[in-house]
Length: 275
Length: 260
Image (tube, rainbow over all chains, first blue to last red; front, side, top):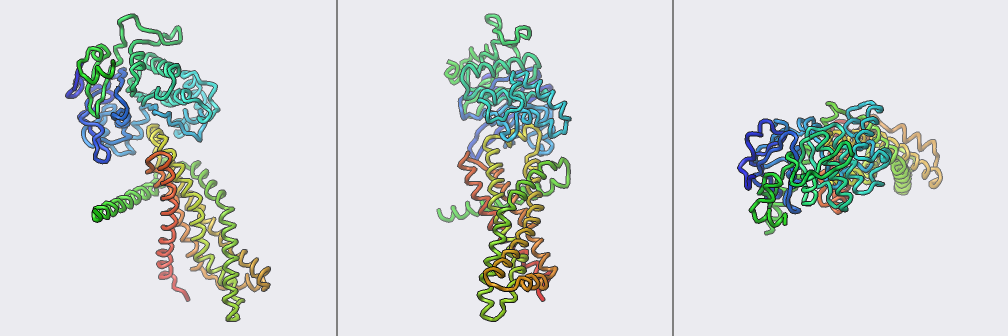
């Protein structure tokens, strides 16, 4: 466990999928993130915690260069992206998948065209697109929405389509921005089950932003059973070793560690948040 | 206090002009390097061109009609009603056709571009596009700019033609003058510099309409209220810019092709 880390696990940085080093960003003179350092190892799922408005979504957008830091270094797949020109970032972003807070589906396109957006731009043949879209929709159990438009889907279905879109090209890094935000508990569990399934089937490294403790604990304490085709709890006292936590408070990283570390943390803010 | 406000406003204005210049220039340059989104160009050409034909046609027709009504009343004092055709055709082709078409298309399309792109910004669809590795400037802005330039060129020709027809209708049916004389005067006094002037202006206006519409759409902030604000800014600035640039282009073209 590291409360207030200087630079999280430097030994892992070389082979990290993502590495932040002393990253800061401000909007209109107001600091949003200050001196943030952490890394994501291959196969690792990092849950980014914190109350609303603390800079979690901003941090996630820094990871794939949708926002630029004012200071610090960000390595994505080993490449420095803090000052990389936008046109060089596009090919790098195609190696990542991102699920946005409100799904961000293109409302004028069908579910098929939304999920296949990248493939359509790359002029992949229609038969190939249809096959891969059906596979992705099958993964999120929404095959029947193939021809529908986002306007006719529920909030939970939109998130699942967004997950299918993010997974289509089997990305090397997944970014989830509050994927259960604003959803009812049953639908939230469905979304978390999909994330657990993705984690355990493809082992894609990921960063998941949430302010819901229950989602984070479910991710840590469950695994996907391929034979049963559903999420099952891990044996009593066990947690998923590849799922770890980051916690933000007022733009600063105050925790970086495992679930056990989190539960044992003496940091007043962490204790207040988890209790 | 007042000095600070003026300084802040001036800085903001300079910054906006700078941002717009970079944005418009980059969008223009994108056409000369891949990837190019030709299907999007065709879709936008249909929306701007076919979609604006009816309003351009009607505004052109009635503007020509009004010109004929007003000019005939004045020209009759000098016994020169015979030159109504010349007056209408030259005014429509050199000035009113390009400017009116530009303003009509700005009202219809700069607003739709700003609101469409603005809605995409506030619902994170633009960020989603960037996250999927697609450049929104290439995908959304460049096709709109080139579609608007090419369609405004043809819409201006339509407006000119229907303006002359509107003038003819008024001349024949209301002023009870000879239609053959009207068309003969309209045609005989037309020179190539007049036509060049009329067809160069929509190229600038098309660029202004689409680039300003997209610029304000892409920098939308503040949710749905922000979308409304961007739409207003886009239409107002595009309309004013069209008239300003029309003045500058006219000045240059008159210097290049002086009147006889």
